[in-house]
Image (cartoon, rainbow, N blue to C red; front, side, top):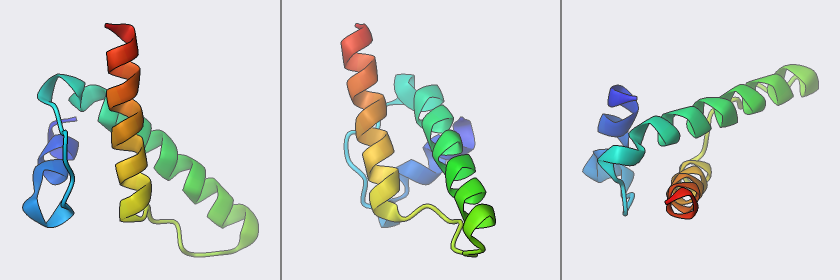
Length: 71
């Protein structure tokens, strides 16, 4: 989670609303998304198994919403 948080905080990522307490949730959702994408790539033979920036943004928003709902 620490490395994930560091990557999300890079200015080049252009991500907003990144929160330290939500770092484990970001990591969990991004790992799950990458795993699903990798499985789809293997099933279809498509080598494009990387997450796109927009997919990462969506998971950040989802993690923030999940955290807000839990609170």
